[in-house]
Length: 423
Image 1 (tube, rainbow, N blue to C red):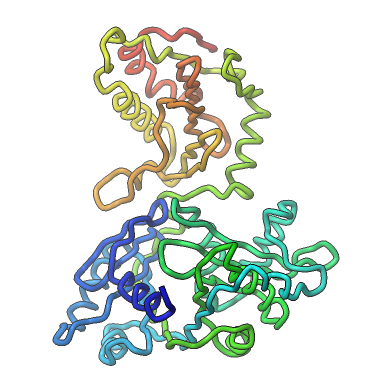
Image 2: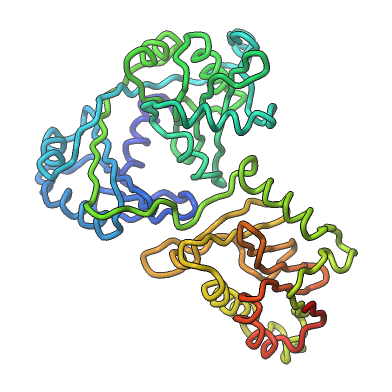
């Protein structure tokens, strides 16, 4: 696929519902427009508009959809889009942002990797220097941009089955002083999210690393203006068009957090597991029973103690357990509180139980409560209440006085008396 074909594919994808999208995001199509609802904000993208499209009516429908969810929205208009679109957005109350260039760069052959300039102490993948994770976050989010994809939003979007996030850091005396980030997804480009430093050597080092064919095999797509635009052109990028973002905010106050979100291992998932391991004396093992020091109060049910356990399959056992636990979490947590779903060897998530799993909202993330081959947990951030599924003991532990009171009667009716209890 040459660059023209990739760009044509990218244009077509702007008007299609993607096969994958971040956890907690609701994606909806309205004719040529695709809306992404993040709970805290939204975006609108579109395929080329057919002649005769009632653009004013199309814009009003999107405004109504975002207003209903109380989400500010960004709508990007490219230089080759229908000339009536920008004025229609402005007339509807959207505020035009600053125009940026859209630039692309082809992959580099493997042997070009040796030509990459490494200024000062060099550019490194963040995961080679995990001790600098917090410093990386601070440097990235403190940079005003404008970035095509804010660092915090990229981290919140997490990982897809088809791609990854890429984070490069520049070290000076062993400390992160600049950050660059990009996202690999289902699109035909690796999207450059942003760079906090427009130093020529830093820009070239990062983009060359991402362009090495053996590393990714995808060309890069970037948005930039001013000095950064010049640096990218010097590094081998070519301008293909321009883009201008338009923004609109509803009158009401939007939510401050997404309803569900991927947990970043460096900032969320890993530290939460560390606290759980220490507080509960967790001993992961296929043979160790029990795997945790059960807190007070708590109760442990055997998952095969169902009255119909001799039947195969047990009638909707997993679904019934999930319904009981989720109802209990709603009772035991205050509005706005998050529940964390953890899987010992896989990605974790956090979610607001009141804003997921209902019509118009994203589905509840994770694989549920019943431990299917690994340890599954639902916990609050302070670990005061939760559930712990042991896949080899085939047990479910519930702790915390409010949660236990909310689920004990129904779980006992479903699974029989607890096999262990601490009061």
